[in-house]
Image (tube, rainbow, N blue to C red; front, side):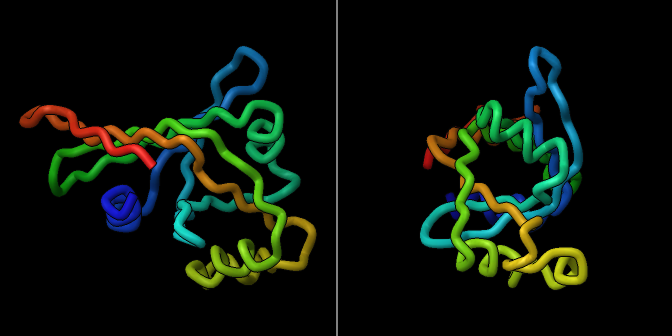
Length: 132
């Protein structure tokens, strides 16, 4: 999990895929934080991505490192955590979001990644899988 967190922090824009019915939906994302030994992402309650993860919590994250030519794909189940302390911990790592979200605003939502399988790939090395 540490390797996944490091990669996503070093390559801060990743793409999050969800499903809306039978239609895949992909968008750029940028929050990733460790809290209580789990990786968390954050979004807004009113956004379609929130409702998609509630309806079908199976997600994928994909990120690319131009510096190393390595990409990461994470398959996981997104589990909503409704605790204030989880929202506060994630937002503490992203001061730029604090003008739009707060732990108590009724809009900030956080999800942790459960049953995650992360695959690091490149054209020059065998894939490496990390589970957490």
